[in-house]
Amino acid sequence: MNYLTLDDFYEAAAEALGIDLATVRAMTNDTLAGSALAAPAAGFGDHEQYPEFPVKTAVLLQAVASNHALPDGNKRTALLCAVLFANLNGYRWLEPDADDPDGDETAEVVEAVATRAVPLAALSAWVENRLAPLPPAPPEILASRPSLVVYPAEYIGDLAYTDNAVELGELIIRDVHGYNPAGVYVRRISGKTDGISVAEIIISVVGDGYAQEELDAENAEAARYPLGPKEFWRSRLVGRITYGPDGHPMTNEEFEADWAESEGG
Amino acid sequence: MSRKAAPVEAEQEAREVDVPGSPASEDDLIRRATADRGAGRDTGRQVEELVQLAAKRNKAALDRLAK
Image (cartoon, rainbow over all chains, first blue to last red; front, side, top):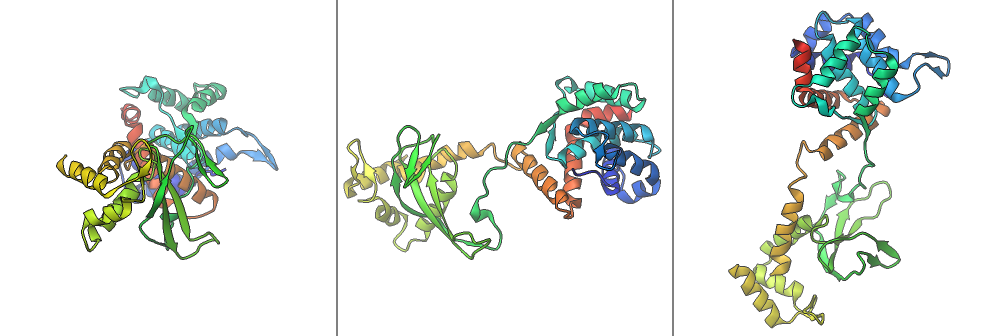
């Protein structure tokens, strides 16, 4: 559990009041602020008084709004502290629909909380509706790691797929949607970290993910090709990709026709 | 040349939603801040950004509370 600190409180108050941190520090009653920030963690020994996160958040909102650690702006600071507390524990804060356009619901709840007119159970239920756990993080892309040298991805061929599933050896990637066939690339990465291998195999399905990045790399390589982009693409495509309804290797004539069409339109 | 041109159009369309400030970016910020705070690392800059985002998203309510 990540509880708020006094520095977090100063940050929220500075934003709520539109003033600088030094002024906030000077005007804050740290004892009252610290007491409010500690309220969600109340308990004794291993027993927590408020074990559930929505209740902890409600307790924090109520304590900051009503402890008056600041001469002004306690309710605004309380709202920002509650949102920050949620964020620092992996939750998004969802504004209620009734807030649109004037912030009515949130403002009324916080006003009532400041006078302790809302029972904790009711406030906790309201807070629970504001909290949305984040979805799992997407898998890390190796190439996004710092300190590694990443080379342009190299196109090594196409991989036709059926039933929206790409098979690569024993690996089956399901729920693939996009143009068929998928492009297969290998991106070399120099340097090692955490014992991870130094290459990524990329299954690139146009319309589904990495295609633009890889295409940019290919086009950049084509632009640097000594004989020009057309010859670069000729070397990549003729005889190397399947073409036409029968899936025959692309011929030079077909390449010329496609190139003329793309140049023309 | 389909390999050269067609994917550009398709992918540009797909990427238009992935811009800074989008929900994905905010989620990343929340994930990093949660992990860094949990690990005891400095989260000062992240807290500043999260508070600014919270103020922006709740501007109407904050304005009402200021009255």
